[in-house]
Length: 432
Image 1: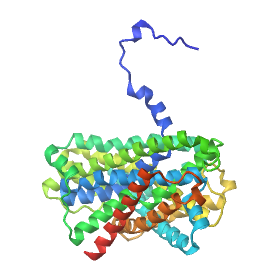
Image 2: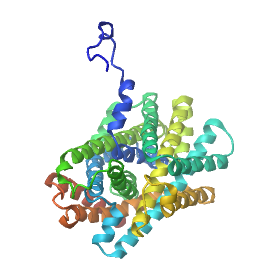
Image 3: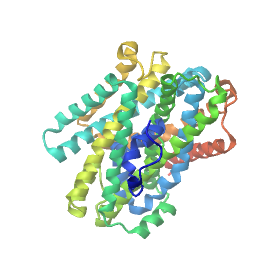
Image 4: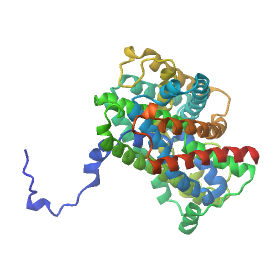
């Protein structure tokens, strides 16, 4: 064992953040990966679209949604850690089967569209950076994602996902090389400036649907179940004495993960507002188009960094999208589920992962514009999220499911505010 007293010559050395980075990442878990996966290529496209169209005025939606997103993701994590089962299993146990069927089918459709859009965006970004046929890159990223998700051990795989979250700093770099109007950006982040017309309401629901997405609920809840199994811990309703430390870990992990997610999303909005919107470029269909449009305005470096972020976040998001669909379908049919299991132990579960990814590849090859379909899938997610959040609130408040660990008052209040906000935004879109 080394002497705890540092040598005199070391006392003046600065503490390097990078030296502590593995330790910091090690203390974070499903919340960090879930939050980072929310800023996937399709999310980048949505944030780029609204940033180009509305400029800084849309920034407040990300600040407003942060506490709501953090609360609902913490509730999803609590459900998994407390009951020892994912959201789909809890739906099957406590509510009519038709509700579960509608939720899972809608989730599967939305996730496949998301996968197709993300894979297509990654292929286009790779072509932009290094050249070559887009189709080859589409197949390559799909194979890479599937191979990692199926063949890597869960511990190694979770570690890889955590490191991939660092790719999101590409958008911090993009803002740093853009000419940002700091006053306008600050006002846009704290003062609601969006109108109530149909286009504005659709944009609001798309942002909320991209930020507060149903697949994230399923993923984080199921990942907490995986963590219980990996550490050989019992669900909290069986071992309530461990609840204090576990729930504190979940809250910290979720607050950091969702804060990171929304901050990066805000950086994307600010970057596109400062460059594209300010120069009259208002119509962006894809994140790659945003990256290409940045080149003559903010320089090739900003353009390349934006594209690198699309690839990095895509590698993080593909397994989360395919995995959340597999958890939902597997729990619905009572299959063996979990990335902790070997492929031969959960063939159907991994089959859904492979099938969803391949359907995404097929969509990426189809003549359908995946990004246009994706924008509306974000709207569908926004509409689906409200009713699903309502059901989650009922599960998390149900002593039959949660035992003595039902939601505390503060979290319950914020959770209900988030649920009402999502439902109101969806209704407002249809009414307008």
